Length: 117
Image: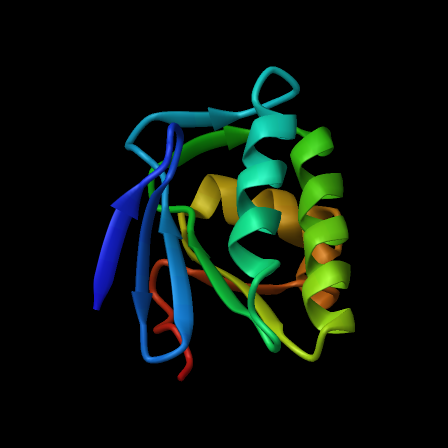
């Protein structure tokens, strides 16, 4: 397992899976959406079939701009035969995915649900 730090994300590589964690109290909004998406795409880019998982446990709020970024990243990763998973999503943030019906498009797992292999 290897770990490194970007300016914004904590990243771990293990068994072909790249896991990204965000600091507690993170707000994902217009102000950080470009940097966030750029860093996630940079992690997926060098891999033939990327398996990118994002731990949203530290996220307290996200905006519609971020939802759009998740959709774009998901499309990019899937086009390359990979998998994009959001997990450890607290109930308030998870509700945003459910109400927007993005939980039917994106792979999203609430805190109580374990991350699939």
